[in-house]
Image (cartoon, rainbow, N blue to C red; front, side, top):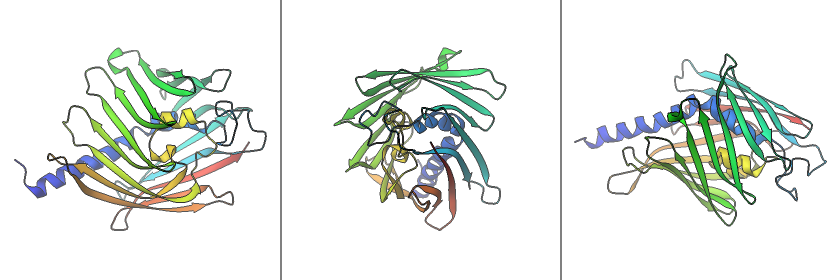
Length: 288
């Protein structure tokens, strides 16, 4: 039996572990999210066609992320993105790893290849659609024990949940609640109940996020308020679910945002409740 102090500390460690896991997954995550950075303005008539607009668009070309898990020794990662003339991401380089992308005739991603630093194939993703909605993402490894699928659910055209399935593991679901077009809260939970569910609640600015000129299917693949919400969140409250089913606040982060002349973020600095830096994102764009 854990006392209240031990329990809170254990939960805080778990929350920190989630954030660290997100960091160590960055090469795959950034390589995956880079898919998002293909074309398609939200005002395009056909959101699946990367050639729908003729006006130049601001597309992410470089992301530099600094993590302050160890404040005296912050860790920096850099990801660069390459595009073709159709404004589609063709290749991403991140921390020695790379990924390449294939699209169908309508501009929808159909396959992503992920490569190790030595150039050998690590795994690949394939995608299936139901009409104009992404239905499933499937990751295939040489060892089938690592294979996984993610399925997506929608309501009125908005993603309301994604569920990760992997052999010998409990399903993990991210569910979303919206206020207007922005995600107001997201809940991350495992059906096994071994680890507590985590809830994140957000407030936003009124400016476009870095993924404004991005294909909607690719935003779905990345998931979360970071890409699915059209604006930038400025506060993030993290809570965990207790055994009684109630939510207990464990962490509050604020984000200071700098913008360019196009009103897109160029730097986002995350701080904890004590004003300490937790993460810093620097975004660079190209006009294409």
